[in-house]
Image 1 (cartoon, helix red, strand yellow):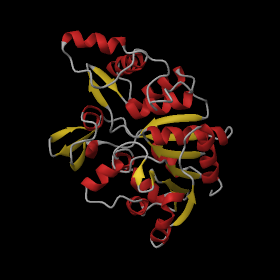
Image 2: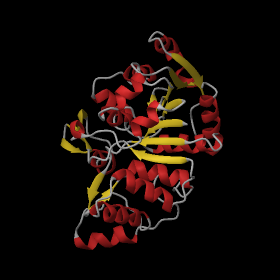
Image 3: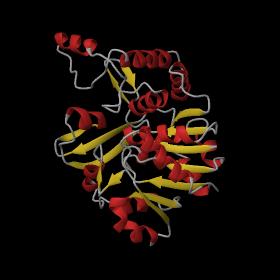
Image 4: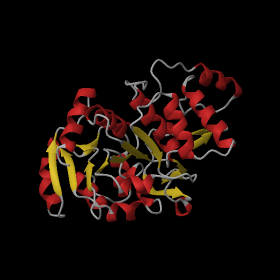
Length: 308
């Protein structure tokens, strides 16, 4: 059994490549839910849905999220009521959010809901998508323009405000969802996907029980840096790291994970950071980490599997 931690487009791309090279081996994906938001009465879980859509082969590959061929008539219709429509929800995508909200109102947990959505989209039987916690948590960003939900910072404000602090609300009350700790303890290897270390991996590590399980597991733990040439290909990792006073580098990410990490995978453009990572007592793999298509994602996944 393999276990992966992640969230966002980078994780989804890598997991698609990984799913193509593991055969029938079980893959459990522990997914960030700090990005979750409630809008228009609907419960939305962007990272969970993006990973399910990608692994089911229905994602909009051009955008990296949402459903291929989706339309936005519903969103456009909302404008006549004067409601905010900055969060892009497609007409097909909204069905997922309605279904999630319906199940949640019936008392279903986030884990149960993710399982039902994955099954509805025909996700392979050997892949399980596990929300990091069944407790409702949200990532909020303190900026020079005030505090705002991460989705507002990312989508509405287009990552322009200066970041001062990142807070995951109610994370102190959150415990690992069913199956999460077992997936870490019983895996033959654990892969930290090329995800934002602050708002995708960070919230997962803050959930009670997860960091301790990673420190105690006998499985090899491998992390893939989301940075290429010192910058993210997508998303605000550099802005968030810089705003928190952190060096924007793969070596810095290795430091964030160092207490449980065995090997750090970095891009060829960041080979100059290799020694700094080795000095932390970690192994390294320097390869092309840019996943411009499914084939390159599979090649990267194969390279990671060779480490195990």
